[in-house]
Length: 259
Image (tube, rainbow, N blue to C red; front, top):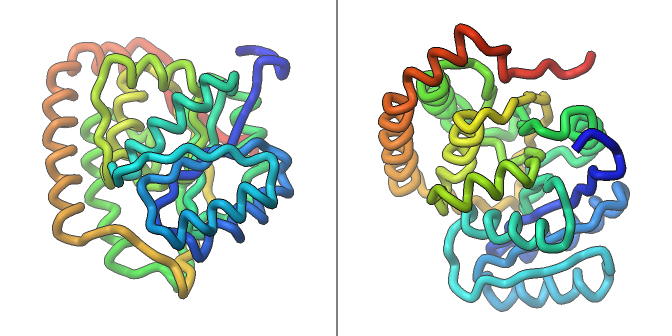
């Protein structure tokens, strides 16, 4: 993928009971003239009705439905497969709840077009709306990810605002089981890094809307994330010779964004 002709991006939105925000999110995305794939992860009737209104009003949107709620990760994985089957080469993951700062999309597009083999990760800049516990708690995951990769390449593995190159993603998910729920973003980022995919971090604002709906369960999801880190640390130990060799003899996988 070295030319603009082979760069075919789409936007991918996992959706679960965000009926109050999905229309506004899709409406704002129209400014960027990109096809949109929404994967409905077993949402309730109100969200299904809101999604039907989206499909009626915006012809650039394709919807896929999972009948049973299977987790954000499973929805995104289905979205990757759907995007690839329609000929797209890259997928920009955007949350349905209005947290992501959509005016940064042109920056993500430019980075992905310039570095088509890279994973472009959003690195959040929080305002006063962000709960302090969520901000400080992320640092625990940051440290574990730096250990799991023996690198500082991944600036924030929890932010869902990121651009995926689909060929290496499909290669990975074709041979590895990725975590299906809240630990998905971390799991797939670390495993793509292990696979040799370079990473670029782009700072972006993250907003917590007053009417936002979060599906994060403090106890259950922190337990899942802890189990994911345990598996990733084990995976790092199994790959330790390769990671050390790469660290010493190969160029850094951390790409610098243009000023």
